[in-house]
Image 1 (tube, rainbow, N blue to C red):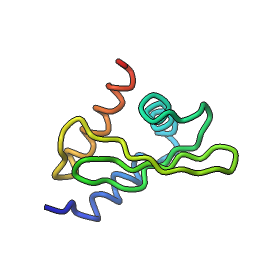
Image 2: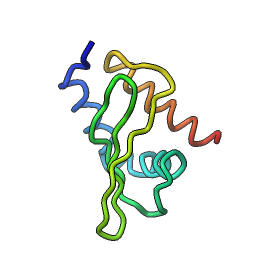
Image 3: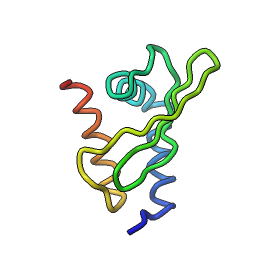
Image 4: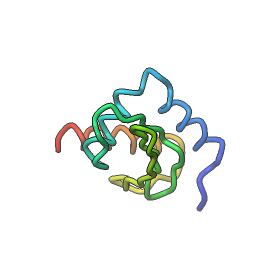
Length: 91
């Protein structure tokens, strides 16, 4: 089952809001090896992963971070992202 593209875009936009910058950077630093002070954006969501771009000093790379559970809808997407934050916090 494919995720609703409108939901994916909405969650990505929400997570890329400047108020979420620290959360996104922390997830990427802890779970994807991003360098400190990198710019991190959530660019796509699939049932099994979140795709992030990480930019530092003009170099950009894309990484996929697996969810802790499969996602099927907008609420799952949000829950999965905050589960990644918990995972990053707890190690």
